[in-house]
Length: 175
Image 1 (cartoon, rainbow, N blue to C red):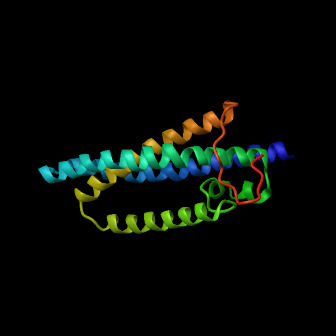
Image 2: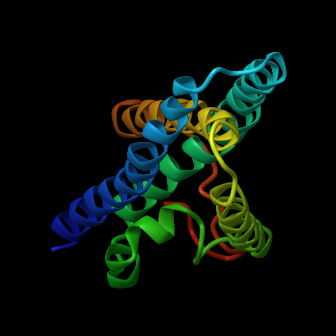
Image 3: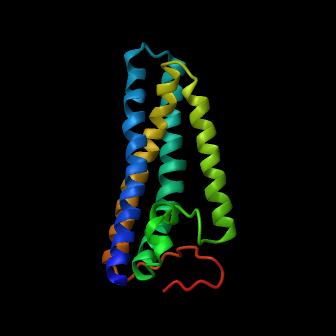
C-alpha cells in the first residue's frame, strides 16, 4: 500500500507542478512572441535583452536551479518514502513548500506566490510590446526552471548520492 501511495504521490506532485509551469509557459509564450510583431525601439530591445538575461540568472539559475528545483525533487523523494495521505493528495503543494516545511520556507513560499500574483496582475495591464518584452524574460526563466526541475527529479530518483535538504519542519524525519 505504501509503495503504491508513494508512487502515486510522486507522480501527482511531478505532474501537478509540471502542469502549473507548463500552463504558464503555454499562456505567456504567445504574448512574448507578439512583442516581435511590433517595431521595437532601441529602448524596448535593450529592456528585452536585459530582462531576459536578468530572468535567466535570477529566476532560472538562482531561483530554480540552485534552490527550488533540488528542494522540490527532494520533497518528491520524501513523499515516495513517506506517503502520508495528505502529502499524496496535495503533492504539488507539498513539493512547492506550502505545508509540512520549516516556518521560514512556508513564509517564503506564500510571500513569493503573492508577489508573483501581484506582478501578473500589473504586467497584464501593460500594452504590447511592453507586455511581451517583460513576458519574454519570464518565459526564459520558467523554461530554465522546468528543465532544471526535470534534471533534479531524475537525479533524485536515479542517484544514490542525492542528499538535498527537503526542508522539513523541526522534528520531522528526512527518511
